[in-house]
Length: 403
Image (cartoon, rainbow, N blue to C red; front, side):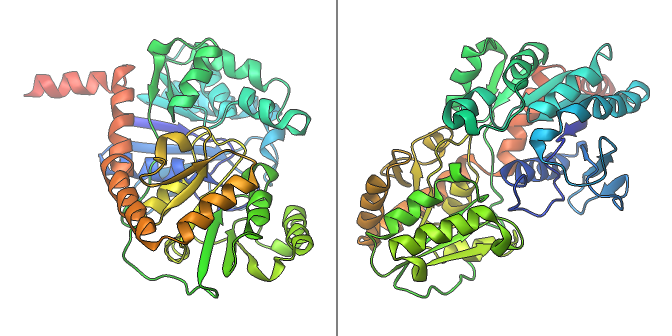
């Protein structure tokens, strides 16, 4: 079938680790590649954020990326993109009116808005993955939430308008039901991991101390890195490596805040901000860790714990959102309350002192990823959602008639 992926701010071609480049970019890229391996024709529509970008790029993974002219051809924070979604939708509608896809899959709420607007009257089914919900972000960030005030109401509208919502975890299902989305129109399709890139075997970075803890993510307060630095005080002979953030870490205000926090606690010499780490280099970093830590205040899903589990590394994670689905407490790692450095330090201290348990957790995590979270498995689940809303029905009927 012909699949249109809409990802207005998260390009699958973007360098990871920036303010607005993270898990959604990986999700769109790897899901598109896996669907292409299933012989579907996949096109990703994302906003043009540089003047020299070609309109269409054919990727080496078998899918296309179309750069949509909507707003300035320059980086724009995602929370400022809403005024440009009309132009984005108009571009899509002009394309699809003459040559409609079999299904449209929106990623993030503004992509969902553009998808709904672009498909009105075209009889094209729309599937929506929110990746994060405004009502959850507002609950946890309060006045620090920089989302447009229209976000929550728009997400409710999208939930009512689309043919199906693909939630990434069980926690999101409950949030969607509270928003008024019928349970009968929600499927759970998790994020995935590349088991060829992320695997237990392979090179690993060399730690500088007897123990190493690794964390990965955008340098924003909600990722909980400050709590992890606080916990480091109780972990002797342990270094902390945080990967993510801008290419120039020294110019990042959040990086300076974290380093200042480490300096005040007397652990600065054991904290390293690695900045952006390429996808190819990430497995080596993860495999170098005794434990990978993911302790955000809230998390819609979280791909990093899956990547660590795929590498055979135990995970300590906050008991929030999708992390409660992926990390099995006492089996593949440990779940701790968010924003509680003492509980985090206790869990880490226990694991670092027990190499046999770390090995058992790592083996169980690798098995769990292979059984449930490879992108090929996720693509098959996604394909079933598309078929459920009628996408590809005509092709299937034609193929059946040909037989």
